[in-house]
Amino acid sequence: MRQVLAITGRELRAAFESPVAYATILIFVLVSAGLFYLVGMPIGGMPLPSLWEGGEASLVVLLAWMPLSLGLLVPALCMGSWTEERRAGTEELFLTFPLRASQLVLGKFLAHTVIVSLLLLLTVLPIAWTVETLGDLDRGTALVGLLGAMLLGAAYVSLALLVSACATDPLVAFLLSALLLLGLWLVRMVVELFPADLAESIDGLTPGAHFMGSAVRGVLDGGDLIYGLTLICAALLLNTWVVEGRRER
Image 1 (cartoon, helix red, strand yellow):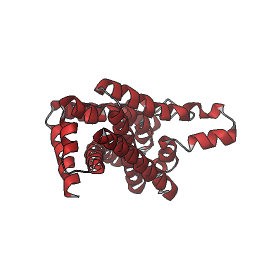
Image 2 (cartoon, one colour; image 1 turned 120 degrees about the vertical axis):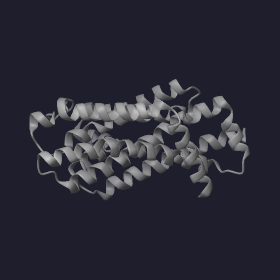
Image 3 (tube, one colour; image 1 turned 135 degrees about the vertical axis):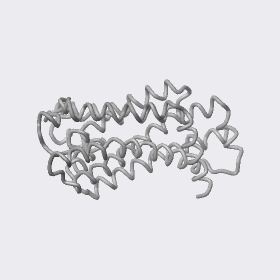
Image 4 (cartoon, one colour; image 1 turned 45 degrees about the vertical axis):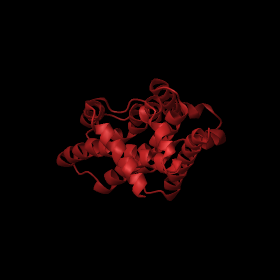
């Protein structure tokens, strides 16, 4: 575990040594707040009004944007995680150390999950405080929604890191992982075009469906938790297999 935490610390230091990380945090917080207060959620089968238009003390609109906004944010954060290591030659150096590939993968996953969770805290908590001063916010529902968003972010991180491990260039990694995550979100927009039974099965395979179906409504669903953890474990195992394969070559 010491090696995993060392990798995690290295990744966190590298992320916050650049002003890009702080700019990303600021932009994400401001855009999320603007969408919540002024725009609402006009996309989907049930459009939601903004806070000022709807006048409801709820974070549903903010959380409803998370599958889409995280689908753009996470690829940008993770695109260089493995591709830059290979470009700089540090991945090859790491693989000569007495470290297991799984430790490298887990360390990177934890670091990026911490960053995404911090972003979500900085976004959700100030808005929740503002809403609570204006109305009767259900704290339990808001907390479950925040935890669900963190689980969704962790799942997205695991998928984006897997794409970064397979790609040869940071830009390619960003485009492919954004296409994957946004594609999973887009499936929910068009799933109604399929027959009912097939639509339900397809929808159940997407991370956004599990997030929107329980956490956004303040429901702790064990099935959705198992789905999220299974997706994360599968992506991390595949990531480990890819990295280990390069070590053997």
